[in-house]
Structures are given as structure tokens and as C-alpha cells.
Image (cartoon, rainbow, N blue to C red):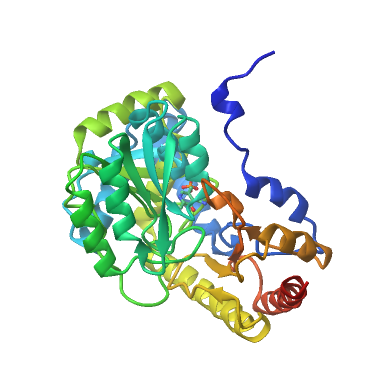
Length: 394
Ligand code: PMP
């Protein structure tokens, strides 16, 4: 039997593979990227399911439209009008099976084999995986503490006419937890608007800000080829698989619609109607505020533990929201080697390697803080700090 080059050249998810070995109860795992299950509004969703069935009956169980349930699209549009003053209408919103599917659809819509994609280095590995299926050339641009390196971005766009889009996670980025500064957003906008490329801003974490003020998007609301992605995974439930694309570009939407028809006809309508019912009758912002309070405490616990237990030469990010901290060990120290050593004392994290399209001598690692108590975080970071000192000294 022979398989396609496409699938043979696409790596299976490193994290999902790691989770298989880190999933035993004695392991303290900072490897996953899961929302904390205590944040799921189970009772309110139970009520929403009952009400949705009572009100919509058979419609909950029938095929539905490809673009998505209009009342849900209206609720999403209203959020962007309210929070950012953006002129977004229901017709500019397209519901997808998680924002992960949006990435895959955009890859299909934009990329021929060999076309260019600008990726943050390091960047979200699920995006690397989704785009890889379309066999592009990746152009990594260094992600600095305040966003993409603008000079590198400009040179990359100027030198590679095959580039179709730039992929960014401007808020509490996965894997680094970094947020683009206002100045960087402005500078990136000024560069990107000169080129005939799309700008994807993938923002599943933006609402989970526990410090500082929300910042305007880079391109959403002003760039002709702006594509904004959102998700209910981190704020309500990932299991429903509800994400969405927001763009005022009708050409993009029409192609996305064709791609989505071929993929799965439409997103689960049961989930769409239930979430619309939930959003209409519950204090959504109060719910999100509870998640923010929870993650803020966990992030602080991890930062304090790192300060106390990591060797001084290890640098780390201080996220203003989201779910991740990114640590950088001295050059030459292998994160994969650290992973093997840490697993021996039952602590797991994700080595930086899979977040790079061209990994080389990777000394970085991702730490998730949303799935452990403050005590467990302290214990896990203490063990990891000890192992780091040993690995660095060896
Ligand atoms: N984009 C980013 C940056 C993510 O971190 C994730 C989830 N790990 C996704 C997209 C996919 O999220 P979902 O499909 O659950 O909406």
C-alpha cells in the first residue's frame, strides 16, 4: 500500500504523542494545553441543552448551513463590536469545527505546493501541522518578547513573492505566552499592508487576560486581507469543537465555504444551538472572569516557583494571560535531554522542538500552568529546577 507524500511528510502531533507517556497519575504534567475542567459551566450547559431541545426540536438534529447558525454568528459579531468597536456583522463570521479546522481550511484555500507561509518561530505546532498538509514552504520569523521581528518580516516578504499569508497569535501566544506590544502591532501592520498577502490573527486566548489592557488587533478591522480566528475552546468548552473565522473579505469566505463543504458540510449544529442558548441566557463575562482569576493564581504560583527553583541563567516569559510560560536554557542545553531526565522524576513539559519549522539545537520548553494546583505546581517546578541544574552542569 502506498500513501500520499502529503501525509507521509506531516508529523503526527508531538504533544499528543507525549501525552500518551505523561498521562499516568504519578506524573506532574505541565505538558498539556488543556483548559482546567473545573472551568466548564456544566450546569448552565445542561440547562442550555434542555432549553435548546425544547425550543428547536428536530432542528438540533438535522443537517444545517455551511456558514453556521446565524444567531450564533450574530452573538460572535456583537462581541467584537462591543469589545473592540469593530464593524463585524453576522455575515462576516464563519463557524468552524474548532479553530483548528479554520487553519486547515485556510491552508486548503490559499496554498499550492511550495507556496510560502510566514510562521512565528517558535509557533503553534497545530498550525504547522495543519498547513504542512498543503505542502508549503515555511518562512520562520523570529518571535521576540514583544512580537515578530519587524525587519526580518519585511525582508522575508520582500524576498519571497510566493508568500500567501502570515500566521500570528498576537495574544498570549502558544507556545510562549508572549503578547505583541501595541507598537509592534502598528509596525507589523505598516509592513503587511504593502504586500498582497493575508494576515491570520489566531486568537483563542485573548479573552483570558489577567494583567494589562486589551490591545487592538494588528489587521482586523483595517486590513483588506485580514482573517481573525476565535474559539469557544478556552472560554466555555473545547469538547464542543466550536471555533470561527471573522473576515470582511467575501472572496476568502466564499472559498472557505467551498472547502468546508468538502470537509464536513457544516459544524455540529447541536453544539452551535446549545452554545447560542448558553450565551443568550448566562452571564458569559462573569464566567470568563472566573477562569481569569483561576489562571492568574496558577500563573503566579508557577512564576514564583520558577523564580525560586530554576537556575538563574534560565530565562522565562511572564504572561499577561493565557495558559503558557516559555523557558529558555543556556545555548547548547538540549530540551529533549531535559525531558528524558525530568520524566525519571515524573515531571513532564513540552520540549521546544515541535514549535519550530526548522528545529536545531533547541534549548527551550513550554510549561502549562492551568491543570495543576498551586501546591503541585510548586513541587513540579522544584523537581524540574533540580534536574535543570544537573543537566546544565553535566
Ligand atoms: N490556535 C491556537 C494558537 C491554539 O493554541 C489552539 C488550541 N491548542 C487552537 C488554535 C485550536 O483550538 P480549537 O480547535 O480547540 O479551537
